[in-house]
Length: 203
Image (tube, rainbow, N blue to C red; front, side, top):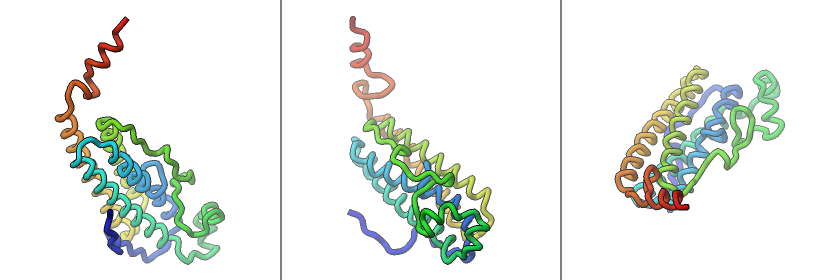
């Protein structure tokens, strides 16, 4: 069970609404490399992870990703709160507004809604951890791209915090991969499995 603390992991206090920024930041909610996908990926993979400490790591990081999702949603909400029709039209926010008003809906910056095809749980420790390492790097690059496009310090600081956490998660998954590889043997190691090799060469 989790205990929910009713505050954001990092404060989000945006003074100036900006629906243009909201339209790109929302990708880290419902986009292919966003926080919704990250939380679902890790909290799903944990069930087939054979080692308890790595199962715990997936639970910890998956739970933290839910907190990051909350931060992104708070940012999008604050950036689109109390918009006038003129602001909506001027910013190009009307296509989103028609479908969702100013609700926070999980879509990518391209407008595509979130889908479970963004994530994978294979049930193989090596495979899943490689997916997790790649996911953290893709999320980090997305934050890099957002920071290149945004000049509001009220937005930049939370984004920098989130980017830093992606780097930490990448490091932790690297540790998990090393630990997993050290524990595997010839019966289940992905790169060398005599049982499979013998079976595949039988006539």
